[in-house]
Image (cartoon, rainbow, N blue to C red; front, side, top):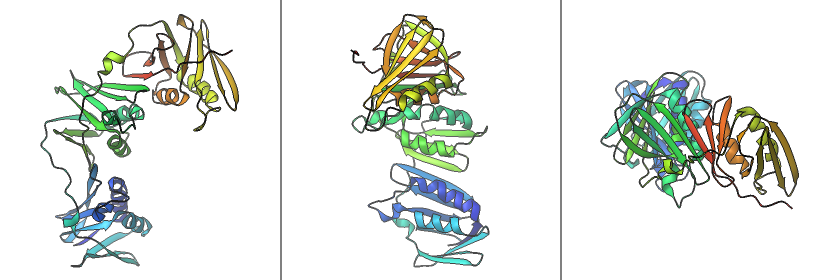
Length: 368
């Protein structure tokens, strides 16, 4: 193999692709990136047997070929090279020569036959989504994906397409996040995408009007983001009927400034830590919310003046779960809907139904 390309393009590609590379693997080749040079481009891939990321980089290919190079070392080398054309050549023993300006390296590569094939699958469905919209939808739901290995189905988000609407739903047993958007699709399908896969896709998504192609198979999915392809297994199993868990009644309701609510919960959070976890006690009365938190290190109180419709109510919640829900609303104001001290807290937009977050309350001990 004998190629040359721009250092900037090469560094960006290796940096993104190497996020799918195993830090420690039983197959040594999986700790590297696979480089294939054919035609007028090089293809670079990283794969950890769960997620694969692959991309093409424009290059001058004088001699076609393939090699696997250690991802960490190769990335470190390319990042430190001067801003010039990079020349890469591999001999028959897989020794790879990297030259850029007056800098040159020799590193040992591995033959590509030692690298497992990335999954190839037959497309059963697909959808095209605006990159900014998908970025917001993933970001506003992925925080609620479970990390509980005993229930693997909830370690991913449910993608549900029906009647021209895409819903993304994440549940971890303590909270739920739903994000909905209209899409141009006549599909009627659902599948569960691992949370780790979505986080990698999120890093590649830009804040523009580019289109992302989602290609769905029986057991795999591909996100085509610009020149990058993220390939992943889907999670198999039965996802909860999430609609049945959304409270339908309303006993207490209010509209509140999101930043004001976040600030108050953050004040209460100062008394909590990884070792100390006490619920935030929240009392809703006619024209105010009284928040308090008591832990082993002290006590905090705060009052927010806000019109409240309905019954007076006291409810407790986990400060981190509430903060993550509020921070991911992206609206200046939110509507809080309560249906009792042990019923889930519902967070909705003031208008429309683009998102819905649920936080399961914490039972409060009576204070003497």
